[in-house]
Length: 125
Image (cartoon, rainbow, N blue to C red):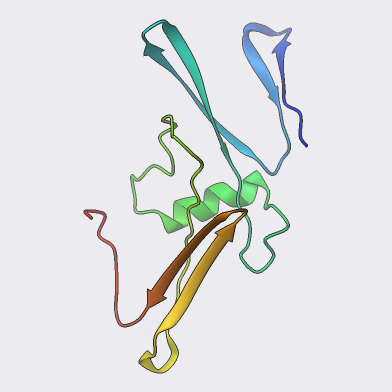
């Protein structure tokens, strides 16, 4: 279990200093909602699919995300979500034009995808 603390920096009393593990990245935003403003915090972590038990550092996450995403695309807008998301990025090639099954599991979440032929996503569907 990891504890997070918000500590006020003496040099800038209105700005909180966030102390967190180097393996996690935080996105934050404030939204005006009925009943008052809400602070929204998104926690991002990345790991290599070949070694999923070890989280990568935040310094690995951002360059990797920037290289994988189309120019001008946000990794996450920091909006509220009903449940956690798992984003899987990479390249899969089916040898000899055969179908290849790709799976992703995280705790109780499980996704399966069949890969075959030339495929790409243009972001519209």
